[in-house]
Image 1 (tube, rainbow, N blue to C red):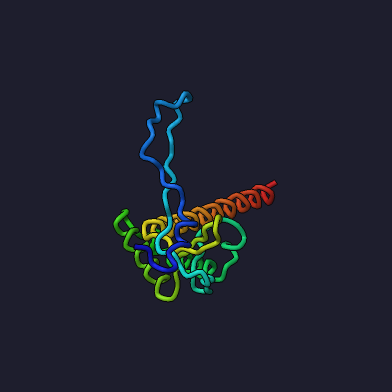
Image 2: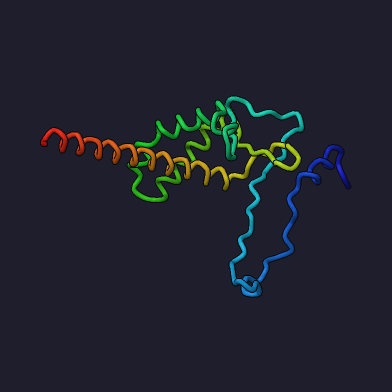
Length: 161
C-alpha cells in the first residue's frame, strides 16, 4: 500500500539498471561503470540546508555554503592528527570522529537535480567525502610548501648572483 506523500519519491528516483551488462559485448570493449546511488533519506519538500549542513556537490553554491566552510575548517584543524595516523585504521577512526562531529548539528545533503528535492546522503558517501577532503587538504598543504621552497631557493639564487 502507498503512504501519503510517497508519490514525490517516485519522481526523484534514478532509473534502476536492469542488472550488470557484459562489458565484453560492447564493440569498443570499454568497461561499463555503474553510477553509485548517494541518496539516503529523502528530506521534506520544504527542507533548506542550514548553516550546519554540508552540501555534497559541485559549484559555488556548495563551495561557499557556511556549513561547507565550517566543515573545511574542522578538517584543517584535524589535519595534524591525520598526518600522524600510521595506517588506514587510524585514519578511519579520525574520519568517523569528524563525521560524528559534523552530524551533531547538521547533515550531509545533496540535491537531486531533476526534481530539486534534498536527500541526506548515505554513510559510505559521507565517509568517502570526509576522507577525500582530508586528502585534498593534505595536497593543498604539500603544494603550498613546495611553492614556498621554490620561491626560497630562487631568492637564494638571486642573492648569490
